[in-house]
Amino acid sequence: MYYVAPAHPRADSQNGIIMADEDDEQNPDDAPEPEPRLFTLTEAERARKELEPFLVEAMDCRKKLAGLETDLTAVSARITMMGGVIVPYEKLATLRVEHQHLAETLKSSLNRILETGCLIKDLEVGLLDFPALINNEEVYLCWRLGEDRIRFYHRQDEGFAGRKPLDPRDLGPGDVVQ
Image 1 (tube, one colour):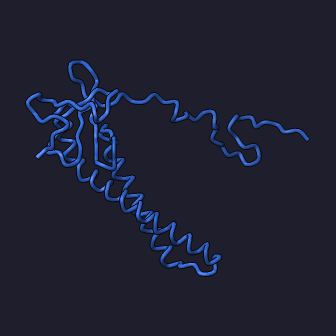
Image 2 (cartoon, rainbow, N blue to C red):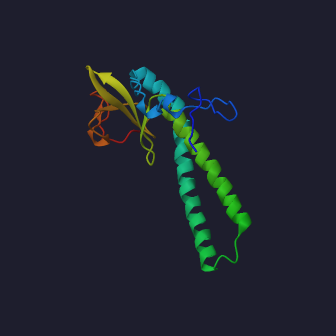
C-alpha cells in the first residue's frame, strides 16, 4: 500500500481539513531581539517610583515561596517515611494552592517590571538597572531598594561594585543613604 499526498499541501485527504504546516510557522527564537530601551534619568526615576511596589511584592512572594517549598518538602518526607499510608491531603492541597498563587503573583510582578525595559539584577536585595546613555556610552542607571532616588550608574561590563555617583557631590557607593 502506498501513501498519496493530498493535492493541497496542507489538506488532509480523508476529511478535507486544512492542517497547519509546521514549516510555515516562524520560530519565535529566530526573531531579532528588540533594541533595549534607553532611559533618561527622569524616565528612570518615574519608572522606579512606579515599579517599586511590584519589586517589593516580587521580593515578598519569593521569600514566601521559599518557605512553602520547605513545607512541601517536609510533607513529602513525612509521606515517604510513613510509606505513603497517611497522606495529609487537605494540608497538601492548601500548600499547593498557596504555592501556585504566589508563583503567579511573582511572575506577574516580574513581568510588570521587565516589560518597561528595566533589568532586575538582584531580587534578594531589590537591585534594578535602567539602560541609559552617558557621554555616548551605554551604561546602567542603578538603584537599590531603600535608596531615595537613582543616584548611581555603572558601565554595562561592571556590576554593583563599579557604581559611580551621577553627581560627584552626591554620596559615594560605600556611603549609607539617609
